[in-house]
Length: 278
Image 1 (cartoon, one colour):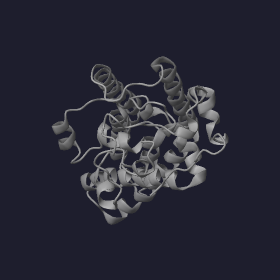
Image 2: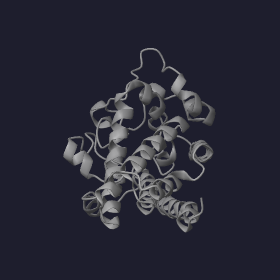
Image 3: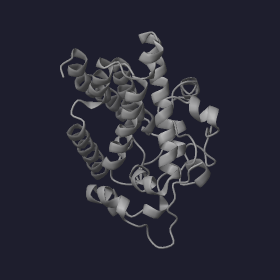
Image 4: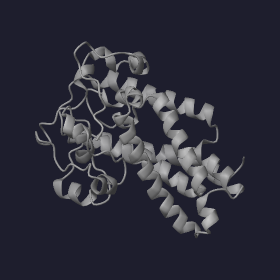
């Protein structure tokens, strides 16, 4: 399959990710909110190694990626949008919004279903939350996520351009909203009208059950607000917030081997192991 869009996918996604990562990493180093609890070097090595593994696994299973799949589906005229004869621009806007809603629903499900939580807890077990946490997901979770989005791309007939825009948006906002960055309060409130901010999403990584069960959105804030999972502030205040999973507090859990094996490991006796879904 050959397409100019397909050849641009990886460079565009990589360029945006590097820019957002660099800006937010610099911001959190200069103006962080939470004091790091563990050494950054080993954490970053493990987290970035995990995303490298995720990327290889996805490309082995779906060499052309979701954009390639969208082009293939589009070439056959499949999906709801083409059947309805929607204008391409309208279909693209609806597609980005529906994909974001689908990722919200997926996130809620990964908390609610015990078997899925065992993979998603790799993300939540990070002792600190920063730009690399936004990339730290178990390969099985990534494969399931890609499969879910693939179903939507095929079923709706999502345009390839919208698929690429959404993938760039999802990667960029995940890095952005996991940053340990101290945004000015007024800027945070303004951005929250549309986008999930670091202060908003950090609450979702709280050790407190009620806070852990809120703010599931990755890109748009609308779904949390509409579906009753939005939380404005943590009870302990933004600087008093504690993050991570108490049942997985051992330092060894931060190593790459442990992150890959974690879904099959049990927490220490007596520890609560739940996703705390809504």
